[in-house]
Length: 235
Image 1 (cartoon, rainbow, N blue to C red):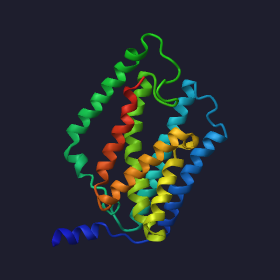
Image 2: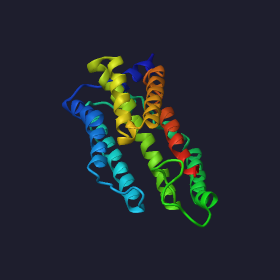
Image 3: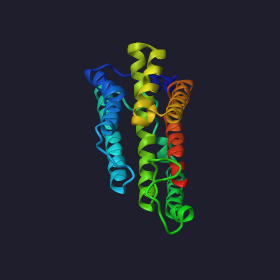
Image 4: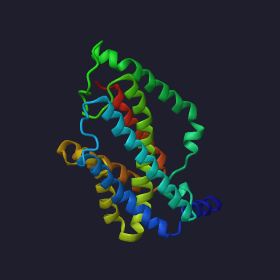
């Protein structure tokens, strides 16, 4: 009984003005920002190395700013990370295992370009138009994958679903969060093959989170990071 009572307390939160602002920034503001950077031609030549770094540098910065907004909102609600279904003890207790996986990914980043391309490194990845090509880009992608896995699950699943459902109900909360997650990827969300991938993965992750009773967000984070890391091992 005591553990159940403590879990209920951990998952409690109080609506604040910051909750509304955070939801608007997460679900509307950030996707609009990603679209604007593309359609205003902030990055006009993605075939160039400089624009690749600029694009993903801005994306990573935006992700962490977004997570900061959510963390501030959670604090203003007098809640904690368990209120969004996240228990960080899994990462703390399994830190050696996760560090080993990152070292393995680093090894792939070192040898993949030479293995796939030989001495002539192309300007663009063959598997994904915005994917990492060089050693440096693949190392950066490890950080990008970890960032995206944590931030996007915390923001679009843990926070958006647990908060938004209180305002509009679960079905509409699902539709809004999944659509926002897809649009957050920028103009590629209007390319059919990518749009399908974003909506399908968003749906799978969201439904899984609900089936886990809005708990164990760390499992979704691990899966998300793993999927994104897979890109560093592609040509």
